[in-house]
Length: 338
Image: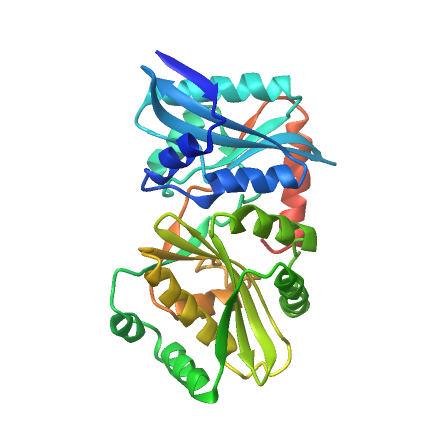
């Protein structure tokens, strides 16, 4: 018998999430806290089968101009071969969604993109979402190697720029200072002006930092050259993975390889913490050479590693209002070059 109950104990939640190979910080306790701090209502739900916790799902209620909906990034986390569990989850989505006046549920599970996964969700009543939900095409670096081997497997130019930057005297500082969030925002706005993407707000960065810092799951890395911060990054450490989440770089001295030295220091810190994977986060699909992330994708791929495609976000429509959202997001996707 399957029962779905709220989980209010942080230890129970985290012990289960971190026990799974496909765990993600997007389903962590602190990601839920982060969203609460932003003013979103959240639901932490446990799926119990014969009184054993067999699945978890963090649902985030979003109220936007285009309508109210639930999103589940990096989840749900269940045994996808358990059809009964999936059916109960769909029933939960429908009932909870209607009770909260949602027009749809959007999920992006930790499932590798495949025909089998697509059929599973299609049979469950889902459709392919018009927009992505967090990174779906990512770049993963296996850290279970020596530093020497990691350097050897990098692109020749990347390896050269790391060594050049170190010789030039670029230093990397790790910090927990909330004031550095302002600097991150400032440098990201400079990056936005160069690459033309829509940034997150300063408050968004501050609340994410606040949510993860208490458990030592986030660090700010700053690359400094001649007393100037030329690059900065938010790195999340969760379980056996490190995540390159947000960053920014100065438009001045763009020929100084500060970002390369910064990433090398992140890799070394991740290894020191016992991480097995460094997720460099989103990259553009290989066939989309004009994608807004094409430039940064080349940078990330230079550190070695390989691409990984998660199943694209899927929506479970709950009423006719959803189709207005669908059309709106198709248009927005085209405008933002996503």
